[in-house]
Length: 211
Image (cartoon, rainbow, N blue to C red; front, top):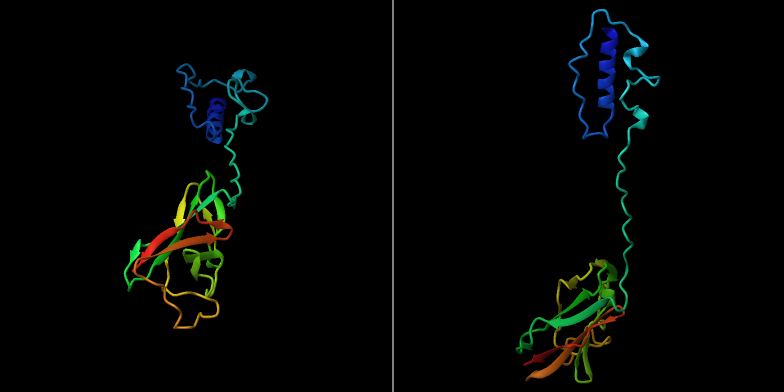
């Protein structure tokens, strides 16, 4: 009786020890294996030399499920010259005498992969012209320029969050504190905004009118 009990306990222990066989089910007990009061341990009980019974798999033979290997993420590289489109825009097409143009730049990743780009104010330049006359340049009197490296997602378009306001005056590095700088003419005069960010230039310019 003790021999039969030892076999049952060993079989239960092996089933608990095999966590990778989650889909396997214990074998149904046979109705013809009732223990006999006169049964004694013997070599005919089906026990093998490695401590398992016949028909069972030794622990070392249990197949281990192979776990998927994580692939390393591709390194995000800097945006190339042909990877990004830069666009200049204004909040309106026409401005009354007391209205100030608000200037924005946007970037579009033209590729199917992410890339990094510096969008800090230190590399941004907004230029307003009228014909061949440069009226205003944002870098002439820029204060506290910043550097900001961001990741531009594949196909993503990002725009400057806070528009830059042009005060409708002519800029110069020598007149930043001058409150009497020449004021841009109105009466339907046409102006164009172009932007650059680092080595990236806007495609064309944004036209607007001053009244």
